[in-house]
Image 1 (cartoon, one colour):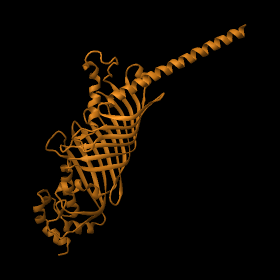
Image 2: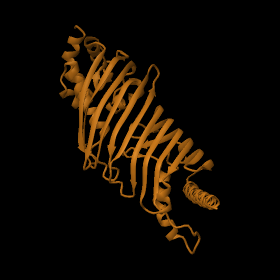
Image 3: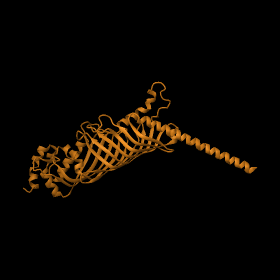
Image 4: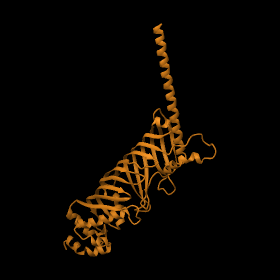
Length: 379
């Protein structure tokens, strides 16, 4: 009798456990499908996904594309072969938006730097997400029984894998100059909306493929997105100088053709209350310039003949030190121009000539460097 009673108790407990598991799976299934509906709502006005698969612990979007505005250099601002999102189920049940991780594979992300220097990415997505909390209250009648998303959202970790970042820079040329960081991976940790006052950690790795070499780029640091305060470290290794030609040459008004050489860069940047302080070094390896014979032909506003002769004298490597200091809110302060002013002066200094003429422009530079040119050419 006792054994029979014990069996019934065990059977009852097993039944309760099975029932609880079924209820838990049902709740999980409901929650995950709720997230899917939210994703579909967000994507509808700005892009598409070929399919959305709901699993027990994650949601996977396949063949995702986000369209770009009319003034964008590409039709899509973002594409990905696959996006996997892992939400915190407990927070979702409490109506809190908390994603433990978002993994994007096979991606292409376009970034546009406007002529003003402002960097833009995913403009339609940002606009869509910012409008979501107000959509339900703005909708007429009871168009949707689904409650609006809470304003607070937390994303713990975003990982980019097997993709590319494509930079379109309108500040150096029109149409915008394009630089592709391929074989790219990146991570973004801790995005807490809507305030964005807490530090968000950033890390990027990738390659810049040039005509002769494939250079490496790394970027690490943190940023408080709301205030723009940040501390970051940027490095370039073995990048073809030709690839960065608009930044090193055309902004300085140079006409000389670079025929070879690679570039290394180290820069530590700190932004506090919109003031930037960024010391760094650029090392040119094996720089080769085409000497056209034109005495007015220049490289960084220095006569090409003088530059070629000095490079032969200095050997394969020449290192330029620079420090960028300025107020990012000052319309007269331009990062590119500030950097080029520093590099021109230090390039002249490295050649052993006066930087005073360099600052006054190419015409006076030629005149001021006359004696140095004669000495360097052995005349």
